[in-house]
Length: 71
Image (cartoon, rainbow, N blue to C red; front, side, top):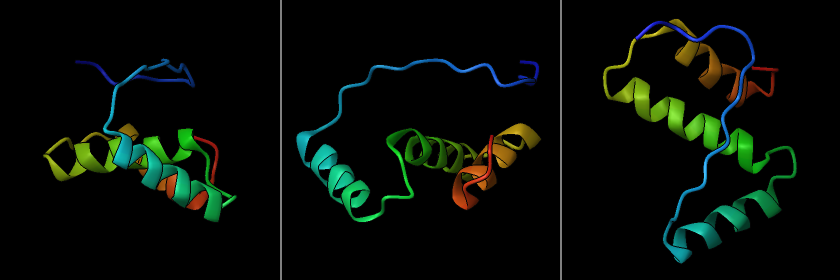
């Protein structure tokens, strides 16, 4: 798989347990600098890094989502 370049985005629709959704909403309500998109980018990129994906663009997305920079 070749690295993705540019700022192309993909929209996802996923089903998650209601308890997880409520926890996410509580967090986002308490942290107005975070959006659902930013939180999901941070979570998914961290998951990939923790599970052996060693790709610079994934690392960059993670760091950018944590520090509020444009991805």
